[in-house]
Length: 551
Image (cartoon, rainbow, N blue to C red):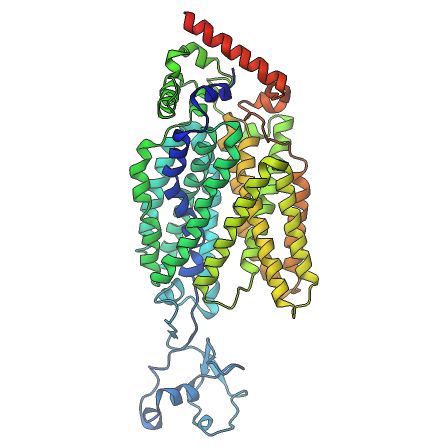
């Protein structure tokens, strides 16, 4: 008997499953608020050298503030003060019209900087003067954060399969709250970087568990609905981040604001069920029956305890060896699992690198940073709804390959399109970003359907690691424009097309039962979902129910 047969008895898509989506909405909204937080807290506002400490005697003292700037700070071609240089000594001759400052000696800023606070009240750059020679340190916090996400993907992939989805979800909540709030009170750059790293580790546990719990409680026909509609929480959180950042322009309160909703998530954690699939796979039959009965009651169905004995549930084909602990090594021990692990790793790397490469390389719409961020987030909503319509029509594999290949084509078009056609280039870029988001939405659902239950969390953890590796590499790729301006676009285009072609080698999972054990991957006939197999499975289930009822 398959686990899907049990879901059919208790309703695999009812109020119970909808409640799970609602309970996991808050933590999933928090994810983009932290993942994209660096767009605001690491912003570098316009700045110039501080001249307030210069000699305030003699002629300099009689000058207005504008005249002091003229004689103290050189200007750029657009007439604005240079950010990192000042004259070695006041150049009073510049007060005369027509004087040229191009050849005058300059030095680096001697007394710090003055920042334009019209957009940000305070950022990491203004807090610790991360500008000029130290400008890269401000952006480095993002790389450090995603490195924590990579480590968290490995750690929580193991912990979730070892200790269960629900327990590790609570640990993720607490870890993110503690280190998230602590980072808002950091008094040094190094301490802040360490705390952001640990926050990234905790957030990965939320990302992995919230997805897997949702998928493992729903029947085959509604997996794509749960995966896609649930992922809309990301878009909602992304749009909310623009609003939070617009209202709160100081980086410390902003971090606390986007972390605070997890307090509500901790309170609602008590109502989130443990995965019955995981419980059965680990021999915890009584607890599995408790949650299955709870699901049946919530969905107004008859309790399983009145239909099945514990022995029946213990024989459900979700079980491997109950005394075996699965590790990441099980992903590569057998031939087909090894092939699946290699292919999904390549696709995940390509999806993440392409998505963030496009996002970081779009120049924007000439609007302020908050409205631009909101528009980018809003674009993702139609992309998700579009992919939901196609997932059950043409299948997961074609959707995954198609979105990646079309993304690569969009990038290629912009490589060859003249820059004076900026409106067409912008439309193509937006289309490419929407397609890359559709690819991201598809791969999240696709991965949970490809890996068997006994190593699903390990599989999701491994692919999440590959994803964050792609995220971390994307900014480095964009730096290659100093070598050749088209090189980053060519690399990202190539990665999108190659990963799209690799996706065609993956098996289709539309209307196929979730694999439970590694044998279901190595011997796919066991997991056959043909009409004959379904009918036979239904007959066996009916016979078993009848036998248990008689007993």
